[in-house]
Length: 239
Image 1 (cartoon, helix red, strand yellow):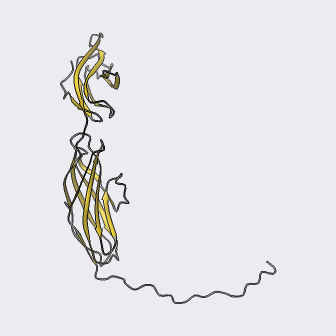
Image 2 (cartoon, helix red, strand yellow):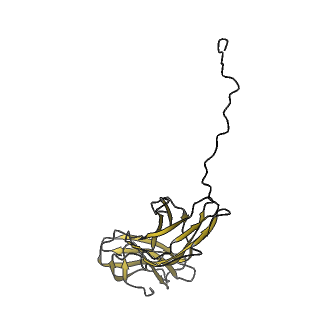
Image 3 (cartoon, rainbow, N blue to C red):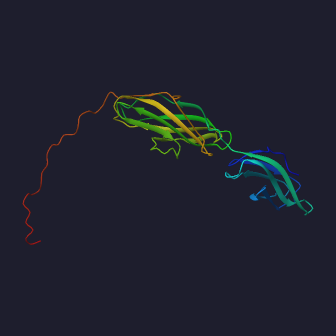
């Protein structure tokens, strides 16, 4: 018997299925029709059951299809179980839930300082592929980019998934502000999110600005004391 599963499927998104009453230690095949595509081969356990996460190919056309299970019954007879399904396409981009900072006031007077950026985001189908946050300091002509790999920018801090999943999770990054940076304000400019189906969402605002203070700014350039040579007369007659 095949356990029930949601028959509204999406291209590029996995779905879960299970079954029982199959020949123990055998294999079953999961197919997608009408154009036959072998989705996966699953091992049946010693009790005759299986649980599988099955990926629907990203290039599957929208519309009516059939998921078919080919295997053997517990008595060793061949069996086919067909279930009508509808395959759709994920066209909705991920959602930004929140952006927070462990502090917005950074004092680098006595050395470099580190703060934490936390981002909560969700994508109900294919999952968040990348996140990218951008601050800018106009007087200093200096940008701060925090994001995941794939953000297509030079990152000052890399966001890593610390809880949940890419469909509903929390990402964090530690960012170190270098010593010697002059006082300035990093204004939050924008954010971008992309899911695994290449749906992008973006927006302005949503994160606090960052204030950098430094009461010990080095504004004096280095001083050349002297330049000397061991000799200024070089004779290369004999070598």
